[in-house]
Length: 355
Image (cartoon, rainbow, N blue to C red; front, side, top):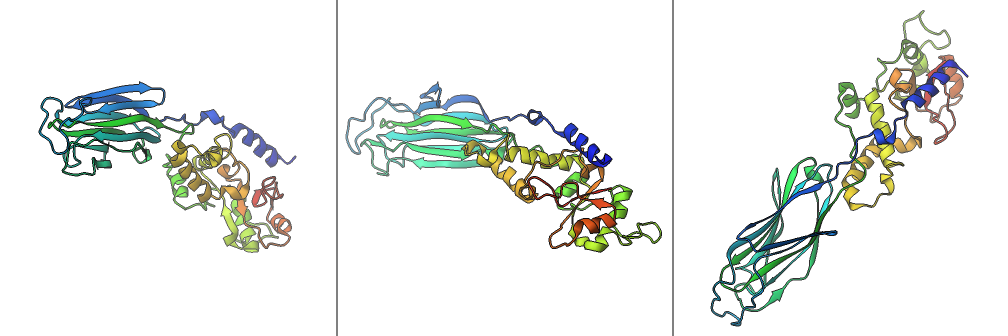
């Protein structure tokens, strides 16, 4: 076995990281459930989530449509329930809600808001009896399901606020909350970008061809070089024989190569986001899929090398071979060869090393 192949195999074995060494998932968490306003909030926490009634209830309005007040059985002001959430890696908050009332919709109603560091987002506004300014008849809304992706506020704190407004007339109103819960993802988001290494960040931004950091032998094999210093059979380098525009990749920063490996491991097994249908993983899945497609990882069909691989040592180049005839003979003229000429996923036919 040539020394370079043996070295590359050993480095590849050393570089394979344990899948568990990646950052662990940090799902969203409910940190507090707090009643407020004028009170009359009853909270139940069960295995399916948080349920609550919001607003004073239990005394039917006895006087019919548009009757006189019934003092002392309805507060004046909002009954409020606040659920605090640390979003962490992101996820989905979901719940069902409804309203029952003896009052008209312009007097008593339900609001549900998501309070975020960047502003308040109305989820439900002024849910009340459609009769408008008439009161005294009983009305109940359907039980409505709602979910909200919290991923835009990753690593931030938000509040889910339920508020039932009551006017004190005596025609009671109660909001109903069922099974408020949050779901995260068992797969953590990508570690990078951004990168600690400016050169790796430059690669991520699209500047992906770097021949300056190849070894001197690889630079001479690929590029034109001064007369008298090169290989007589390859006076203008492999670039001159096949066309400089065929270069796909040369040197890669180790942190950038680790990014490739992490994308693969999250999209394919063991992470397997490709087949994941969990709504709590939707945002992370979309981000990983975008990176998988951006870097063309599907074309190779195999797991990328680790951060100690040949590209990261300046020992390898990738060259498009489409349409080339006798590519191995041409490469040999410049001291290059393909260690894995078979098609993917078995081989890597675009990968060239120096002999």
